Length: 279
Image (cartoon, rainbow, N blue to C red; front, top):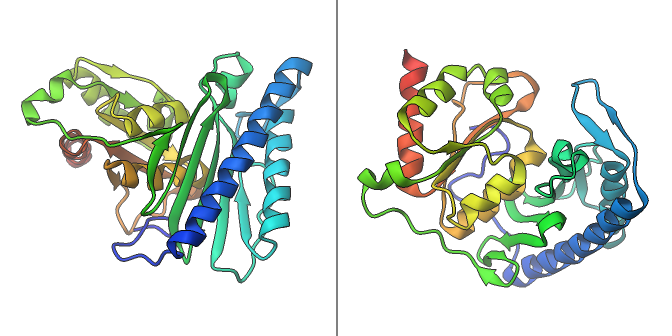
């Protein structure tokens, strides 16, 4: 599996240390949420990046805010973010930042964007926070500490019978993501074979799987910062999480294709993915 996949046996910080990291992460999320609110009042500018995606003043301001807090509390830790250069050190700890996941939604005043923060320890993801300021919803958790939506602990239960899959909502990324991954046929087969496929994209869709509102999310062509927080939160909420790339794949840009959610629904989607791959 790729470098960013959690191994079967992982080393984690002690529980008290991990809880402190999580408390600090939530404090950061409080501050970045306030920063988003301020920008929505006073306004902001935006531009297109070389990959034709949008970036705003808010993206840079939030990432700078997060980096400044992490540098103050954990000066030796490494940091990887979407908008600013990486800071690498010899530390076992690495923070991963997506300041605004869903910038396109943010620009169009659709409140389904979020700020993502994750922590990796000795190569394994151990903590995640997904904060959605527009709808005042926050998912947070760490290994051994559970996953929470605001003050409610999340537990995702599998469906009782595989025949019930037809009644589950399947959330997918944008069609362009499947195109970039070379998986358009997978999306077309899924839409033809399942009556309720919906595009709840970005971190909002991930949150729906974490709370069991959708059966699963099938999301290709993701960067590390798009998915790192979700990996931990899904595991702790009881979701099944599958990295869909083969071990020998090293497709451009280090992007990842993933599916996660209720176990039987995920298994069905993995089979569909693999069957189309063989055709």
